[in-house]
Length: 325
Image (cartoon, rainbow, N blue to C red):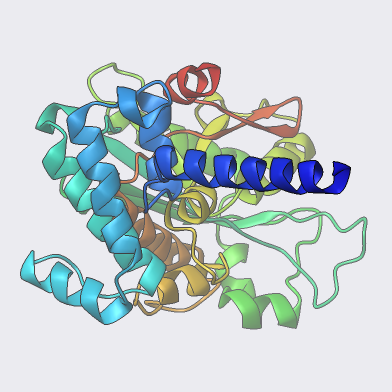
């Protein structure tokens, strides 16, 4: 008798669970990273969402289920760029619909100009731990973020003083010859010329907003910081904060490829223009990647700074608000 009671009780429990499972709402399909972002902005639960954001979440889910060719065809219909790996194409399409469904007033704020920099420095084929790199090429491209045109550029070679003779490996890697650096000014003079050039373009005048952009943190935290220490000069204020383009690329596109310069270009369906490890040519290609990020809807913000020789992240006010919700 006891066994029969236990059996009947167990069956009732199972049927109760099945009944409740049919009453509970099913999880909405398409809950990806974009869906999480929309959820954060609207306070969390789907039932409380703004209808536009709910529609945007469903659109993102549909895009996630499309294959690369379907996404490419849709981009072509919308007269958008169709080059790039699948993750890039999907992000591009999502960004398009996000901009369309939200008001034009939601277009990300951006700087008026980017100062794209890529140093070249002295090197050996195998650098010993105590090797002192010196900047031997200082290029800057002034990129208009509205037109994405390089409006002007600064370029100078620098004469090294700690290791004044370039190694054959350094010349082969960078294309910079001994003759080029021998007739160049030393770094303190080049830096003074750089700051004068930036002032002539309106930097610090309050009329336009500028931001330094680099491929990673090393140009600022290693090469420029160490160079200023060698020369006994203060670290220049304009270069204390910068946009790490590599970090924005990785966070925005979430690609499976790497984030070396040529790998990022390949993910965008682009080829390197010029000679790798030429400071000016590297800067040109960094500017191309930054431009593509802007066109695809990425909000390029200063995201790193130098504090007592150490790199620290810079968190935007918008990100702080999102994380506190």
